[in-house]
Image (cartoon, rainbow, N blue to C red; front, side, top):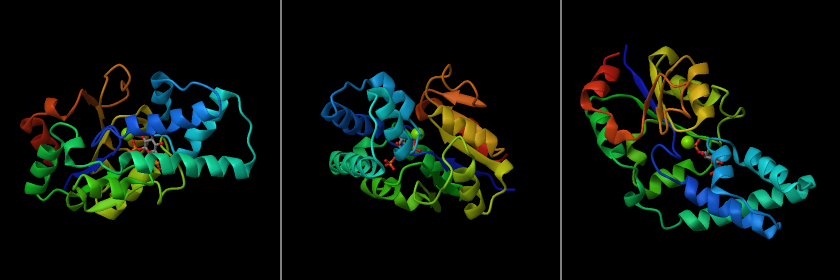
Length: 217
Ligand code: B16
Ligand code: MG
């Protein structure tokens, strides 16, 4: 059987978390409260709607459905203007090297992201061509830690879930990969991502030998 590789986007391929943070902080400040980098950690891998719910809980703010939806749109417009200038230079270290190696072996590759902006971001950083399948926030009903996003990706790749490897930076994403019965690889802090099968600080720490083993699983 072939191994399918599924990549999360934010925090794995690019660091868009900093732009999400700036857009959420702007909204919080407009509403009269602070939003810290630390609080932004809670937003990683979490859907846009759920992020706004948490933000309003932090600010102790109640909103009508209409107002809630307006803030969702406003935050996304600010976020889109922040990522407008993104280019290849924002691809995280050695991501390209790993994608190239996988491509060389004709490995099925998917994106599994909570973001509704995933496709335009891949376009901006010029990585669209590496992905056989893109499953993002526009395709899923249930957010990570639900395994839906990764199960759809596996299905579209034509690879059984047990033969898939997932790269994730968020706790919810590692849980989603485990719930899908896939091999989870955390990218980031091993204390935070302790539920992952393996953890690496970033892709520069993953060597060829390990990748070749995964390809031949
Ligand atoms: P959007 P990932 C996630 O991307 C981000 O980690 C999370 O912070 C964000 O709220 C979510 O996408 C939705 O993003 O507002 O662009 O639809 O890590 O799953 O690639
Ligand atoms: Mg992520």
